[in-house]
Amino acid sequence: MKIKVLDSRIHKTFFLVGSIISIGTIGYMLLSEYSFIDALYQTVITITTVGFGEVKPFTPTEKIFTVFLILTSISVFGYAVSSFSEYLVSGRLFKHFKHKKVEKQIANLKGHTIVCGYGRNGKQAILKLKNYNKDFVVVERNKEMSELLDSEELLNINGDATLDETLISAGIKNAAYLITALPSDANNLFVVLTASQLNKECKVISRASNESSYSKLKIAGADNVIMPDKLGGDHMASLVTTPDVIEFVDRLTIEGETTANLEEIAVDDLPKKYLDKTILDLDLRRQTGCTVIGFRNPDKDYIINPESDCKLIEGSHLIVLGRPKQIFKLRELF
Image (cartoon, one colour):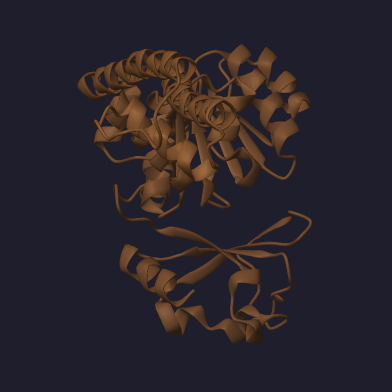
């Protein structure tokens, strides 16, 4: 809202200054029969009170008009100076230009991820996106949290994620993914509905607290619905039934804050020479030390531990396992 008020004050100031110049120019052209240039010149030297003489001696009517012009211009310029000083001192002018800079940065993004909510789940999502060097924009309603994001130099929008204009400001029309991790299932539902309408190609991932919300979010357009509490309970029980397996999987997925052991490769992103070739032809083991442990075909069917003669067809993906250094080499190559 403050940005809108700021824009209104600036536009109003420019409108008033432009109006007084136009009135003066037109008035002198009609009253004194000046040319446009002479009328504009006379208006400018009058409202700026520089003290230059008239283009030609004034009649009483012209003098009255000039007095009116001087008094009006003093009021307008006084308003302009006070408005500018107010925003300069309060820091809102700086915030205005900062907001414009953020808007420009977001406008240049394509295929980025929008994360709604900077709570516990939102922070974890952002950390993962940063580790994989993915572009993202955070939408956070809390002003203090938004300022914290600014201090960490993370691209963000301070606003209500359930509103159309907020998601549009975050670049929803060019986004590839949206993660909504708001604490309220109702708000997450609103975000999912809004995102689905604004960009049907955007993949939406939503958080849910209650099982009853799962089907509603799916119907609303969420591609994936995650229930952190359910996952947490399942994970704890698995540590009892299969502790070594779970610990091993945890080490694969969360090696550290800046490293990873698993990577996904889109076949479409590989050099064209590998299209319709096999996993054996790709020879990842020799080039990077990584091993292909999964294959997803265009129909989203997964093959665990695929054969070496599995074809790399268009639209498919590879799931690759390796140590952090090997994954880093893999990213450099592909």
